[in-house]
Image (cartoon, rainbow over all chains, first blue to last red; front, side):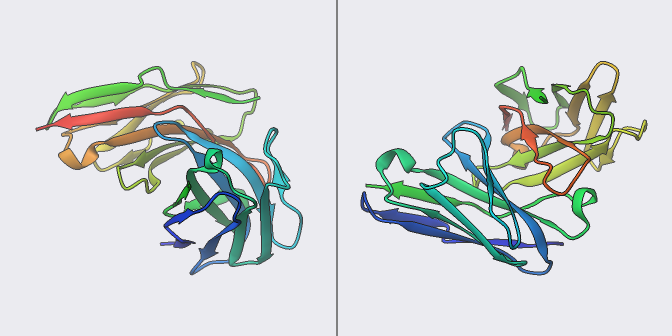
Length: 117
Length: 116
């Protein structure tokens, strides 16, 4: 089955630093990737949708200058949390959809636990 | 706008029993998918079952089956012969079928505990 790899799985860093999370589709070309944030015991909240080669579309309330998304190739999207602060600590999950578009479900990465000290 | 409602925040059942998780949704779309996702403590998102709205037949996957009532906008998940490994958070989700950017909308989830 389709595999989406997310890296790192866990990162701890100091307040003020920037953190990059990678999401790779290993065996298919991901035309669309999605980034979610999940707080403890809560549901997944969509942050943004990115299509390869174009700017990401951010959900209302998500700061695009804070959460930089790049989808430069059909197999890689990155989320950079800039100048991270403790309130940015959360679980971030990516998902990817392939060329078949809407008829293909999203495949999820295993998530990244981000802890800002 | 579409919404997904899961009215049971938490449930517990004994191993080997059958349990049903409720889900209702609201949409004006006619073509869409409904999903149940499982998120165990490892926090992986695992697709349990998928239902296309145009299909009248309820989807089944081994011990997992759904009761899809399109007119009532209801999509419940039944887990038969529950096992300890079924302990997880379960999310009901909706996705319209229009274009590649269509996003999945998740319910708030039901935390299911299977007791030994």
